[in-house]
Length: 158
Image (cartoon, rainbow, N blue to C red):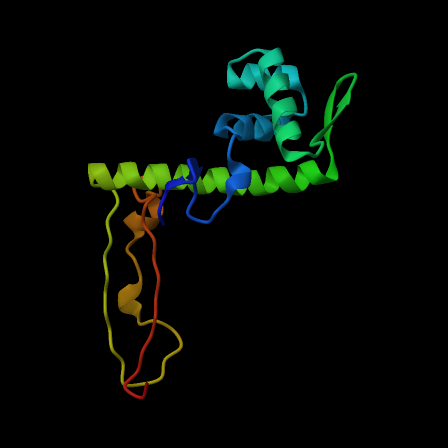
């Protein structure tokens, strides 16, 4: 992945120039508004003003060229396009949050990688019991939030 300038403009690795000019904070505002369905309540959650939230959502809708929310007398309702957009944005924000947490965890040493290699001469579809983890790993999920497991089996026949 490479980021740089192309013809005097910022260029993304995937060429997603349609994201240019949409601030991440506007996407976060859209997700919060979708959760509470009210600009005033969203502003309280975000620690900002209702007019700021409203302006960001309007700017986002203008940039996308689609209405995300139907404004009503008492709150808002997601449009069909808004439902799909917020679902995708939520997944993207979760991925970004994970990347930030992982980078921080790697820096302070809480994220690590352990590889255990086993070779079996028999065809087994289930991993051997040596790959079962002790109870503390399961019973203390907050201490092991960065723990990921993956198994892959090979045999002498392959």
